[in-house]
Image (cartoon, rainbow, N blue to C red; front, side, top):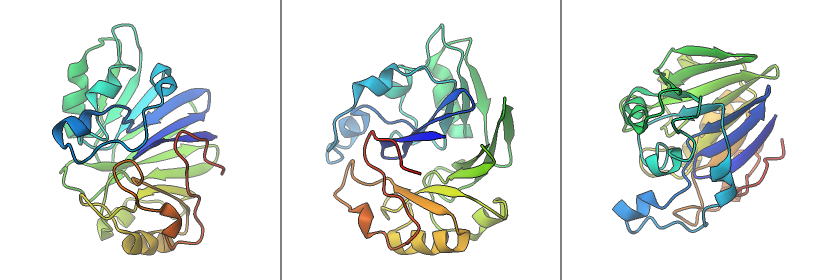
Length: 224
């Protein structure tokens, strides 16, 4: 498994002969609407040239489901499987590309693609159809929470063992803060990769108090 952090909540997975992109935000779309949210890290143009097999979209906020970014991956000739929560699905399927498979991927939904299995789990966020994703691959469970607060309903959707969790710790916009994210990870017992920091703010993810963590770096492979 090779995983690269794309900044904000964006992740690039390479496993099982597939290229998977989750919640890519590689534009200045947010700044155009919210001028105070200016990118502090420039877009790495090489990641816009990737040809993904699968795209995961946890919810319909611009820094997660960004048409300006997604148009680089979804064309009339692409054959991408797009697993998108309901509101994100409503947005992304309008981008076109009849050969792409736009799958409405709400909570409790499962999708198998070769050796990979994806499941949608509950997320407590201001998008009422936001989800997290479980990726079952290489005999491990990789959990992308998406934007979410600490909420008891989440744990009812999770398996007994999660190996890695990718989660927000910025404490804004209906996301967990560092204290709640630490409690979440301690209950989960997984290796944590904190995210959703450093692009629009100056939060230091090294200050996240959970011990079993890997702090990612922009556009670099995460050392698992």
